[in-house]
Image (cartoon, rainbow, N blue to C red; front, top):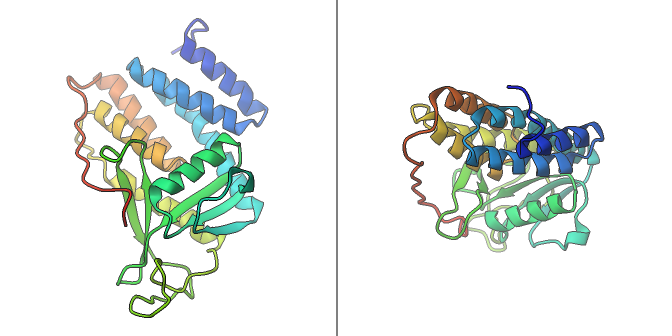
Length: 252
């Protein structure tokens, strides 16, 4: 489909393309997300697939800058906006996933490249649950979780005094490889939740929701693009997607 300069979505993407050339990656993300939402409202699935290409590239660059920046920080309380620096952040109890999302959005609003993950207390099996939440309120927020092995040297302390809310002895932030592998596992867990037999437009909506929660995951962008192309062929479903929300993102 040729671009229509009179189309407001295409005008947004022209601005995004120029911002990408100028390496203004946060501007690319802001414009592309706005264009993506407008295209979905218009049920213009073909445009959505095109929009995802620069969006994925901009987010890839932001993630890479964060990984290359060096600092790795454990967060146990919400930092002031002025304290945020490019780098990797692990939010852990007493911070919960909703608060971690707020921190990430604050960093994005200040154009600070970060890769931020949120862990929950260590399980009895010695795993760290990693959680991300979608946008919404107390009732309609969806939580994505995956359990991963903690970094080497972290030991469970469930029944020992002084273990604190993490239930382990973690005090040092994980290395870059752990961050990137864990972010990948979290996004992969979201993808597995999508029922491939659903109408394509329903898959589009579900993947958009998960991408909003885990924006650094490249395969989520790719699966969403595939679903958009399927929806362009199928057309929209006769009724909207019905959501069933059963998790409370404000608790462990």
